[in-house]
Image (cartoon, rainbow, N blue to C red):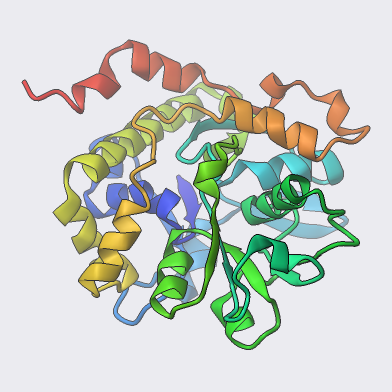
Length: 320
């Protein structure tokens, strides 16, 4: 089985599962594509083996080969947008989520102290359909701004260098970049967790057709078991997580690592799909095509529900 991961805090449980051998524990032979570490000393997967060992061809679009992993771990928001805007995007369903509430920070260049000062300025995000793009649109709505005329929402601006070099005036960031930005003294304009807004955030998702195969469904169930046990380790063993941040991510500064760890305390112990976040994404990116879907078309919670009702999740937190 193959899975692809970035380095965000919401994906830490999957790195914990890799480090602690939980995939093997549940009978999975995993090929993991892990994005390069942000800091020196972190573990980097061999670049010459990623495509040969990890990816598999699943379809052809306009004569071009397209490669995908069996299981994706990424933001649900962008996938929902893709399914409603791209004729080439296959139908996918979210099986579980580790991030269902807006929690990013809005950080500005020095000299900007209030959200109001962002009117007419450039706000960096990773992409329009991304979690940061969702927050940018949400900010415009909350401030009563036209998201096109009153603020410049800049894709590919989810970058410390973009802020340092003045290519953006502020950006929407998650825990790791927030830790870096705050250490460097950039002004924090908003902690969006206080907005109490649902989000279709980091999720485990698969192609619907792939899941129909009984063998694949069993593999997905085992993957969720490994993930859920890793989440339990995250919440129960701070020192283990700090060791993994140093080993895999190269984060050896204890204060910085603590800040990253504390920023992930919201990771849910029972990672059900982001029901309300999916509905919110459908509203935010409303279109003729989006209205062909019902929220239930975007998720399959049967596996996580089975694991919960069996007592598996609660057993991981039992002190008995």
